[in-house]
Image (cartoon, rainbow, N blue to C red):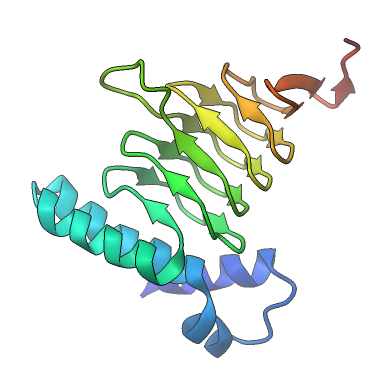
Amino acid sequence: MRRLREDIQTIKKNDPSVKSTIEILLTYPSFYAILFHRWAHFLYQRNGFLISRVLANFSRFLTGIEIHPGAVLGRRVFIDHGMGVVIGETAEVGDEVVIFHGVTLGGTGKDKGKRHPTIGNNVLLSAHVQVLGPIRIGDNSKIGASAVVLEEIPANSTAVGIPAKVVKLNGEKLSH
């Protein structure tokens, strides 16, 4: 119950349009996507691969958010709007991460084993960001809308573009 309360508080903190807890419980897709993911991940870790995938697919059908049951999500992850979010099997998402609609944490098709990104703590992934491959996005970073991230992004930075380039590091603008 403590995690559910934490999830509700996270949504209230990050979405000023939310008017009440009941609104979250009845209408908020990311609340359900994360809740279903926890159950699916629990089963996946105990070799319940088929049932966890069935549960994850049911969640995707209901919410439009696809989170593979093998993915690891930290605490207070907030998925805003959520439609079209895809989080791959070996992705790891830290605490206090904000993910907007259309974000993909995916693979390149070339990697074996760890194929998906690792997202640090307190990261913002703007709408339609694509983070591809077994790379890391450092803590306290922001990725601008529609960026395609193919290389590591250091902590405390802002990256934008296709392919994504760091434009701010430790609060200082970088000249390119």
